[in-house]
Image 1: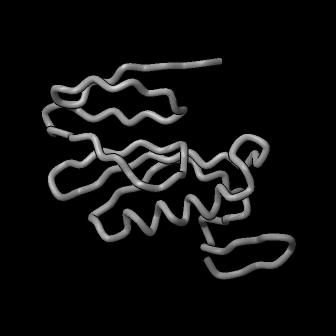
Image 2: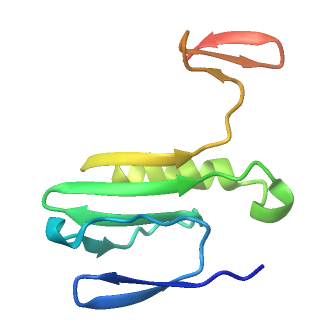
Length: 111
């Protein structure tokens, strides 16, 4: 299903085709922020000195390709120099958030 949205950011109206949306009150004066990364499912805005982003990491390599994790890492490197808040669904079921460990293929590593 093709879903398109039109979102107003300040004086600009942008068309959104992705599966990710970020709603910000206009009183907070957000401005659209474009990343250089090829990671597809994310949307970003700047508010003052802070960068806010929402990401969706699909775990279906038939849709996003086998290099999706590398693209996500590139995105994180790109935005890591700013005051940044990243939210989203990263589809990492191996992470145990309570114990800060990762269980991948029977191995447990510190997260």
